[in-house]
Length: 420
Image (tube, rainbow, N blue to C red; front, side, top):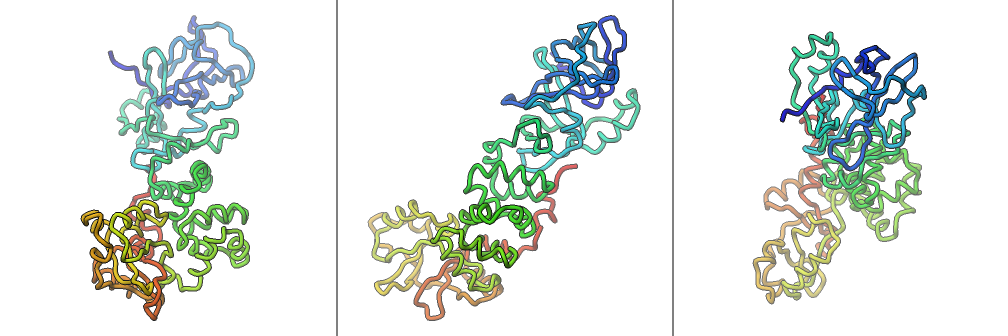
């Protein structure tokens, strides 16, 4: 059985008639009510009749088709249409606006909205982001069918922005965004308008760790844009959950008068790490390094080293390598997590580590760090003080790449561009 399909543009401004065929008015908009259904049903029609916008529930609609909407009742309530909580207007609220396509994590523009009659009920089933839809709307109704539709995006993969609809009382569900990688969410924020970006960040704010991860992935311009609008307390809450090196970078980007007040609001452990990093030039190994890494005595067993990796709160990228220290507490070598997994559990860490350890110093510039990590194929490089007595931190390859790549490179290569 073929499914009946309609496009929003073919219904808008259609004649509203009674059972006798007498014209009552015209269609101003269609109403949906968002919920858990993958394809939200139509709740009713906004009909412009006698100079008023009236609400017509779908129960009173006998026929919905291009150019004509037939009602069952000869009489209508003359009460003006008022949007109820949770309701959205397809034309006013959604058409020509950005939506989030969760499949692929990018923005699309709802140039056309597709409706289908499924089991006797009209539902929103898809969105056509193709620019050719705009041309179709400019043509007279008989000519519109000559412009073929573009590829339709299934509504089940879409999340609309609704912060611009105060009465909707809806927000983007956190559980949907949480399926995306923080970098994908950051890309969405950077591609969106400020209002849309705020709505995304508000949604992920339900998870403080995810919110901090997203801020770490944002470029400098957008980090400042969204942190400057917050109070010192709110800014400190976000920065407290960021990696210390990213937190230090963000604090240096703030206006001078805000740096110290926000720094003082951080928890003491985070504050100490950030203060230490602020002593280094941001474009040196010291400014780039993370103070969070795993260092163990070379006498511990491989089994204990693996257990320490499991229990560590250091960033996953830093845990790719475990560092070993000798009896004097100096760095004596390192072992990759893979080497530990391949070793016998009862072996000592000293039996697994490599002692020909390549390292960098905190005052090295980026070129020196890059050359050392490239020459020795390092994904994690230890940062030692000048006397080789103490390990200060680690530089990971992802942080190095992030600093070396130009600002906005994702957008330059189309990775965060909305589909228009």
